[in-house]
Length: 135
Image 1 (spheres, rainbow, N blue to C red):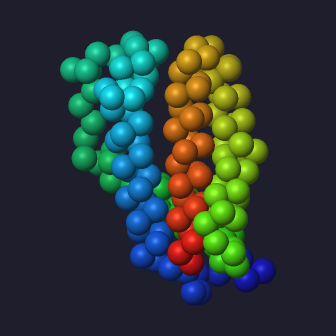
Image 2 (spheres, rainbow, N blue to C red):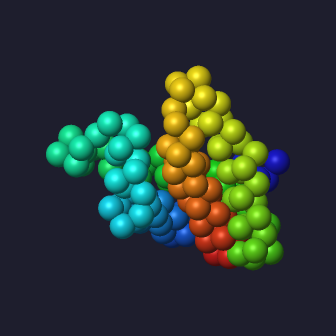
């Protein structure tokens, strides 16, 4: 079970993956992409959104947790393409079905689910490609 060892992990790659997670979220939920629609589905106005620095720190830490575990599984990956496939598989098999299940019970609108699921798919593809190539 060498997959579950911290030995030989590239912590710089994990740190970059955490930063990449934040950057993707910043762009994805910006006004230029899906921010207006996302706020509309939630009934938010721009002035309603005043996230604290603590929120960003917590999201960054959670991103590092995900990146660390993915890096453990991708230790023997043959490159970015294998990592990309792994990230997509994890997103499509575990992450997206889980969040959609919750959103269905919460009676969220389909567009909202697509925005959030799309974000998660892009993040996991990026994590996989980065960590598969740089391990």
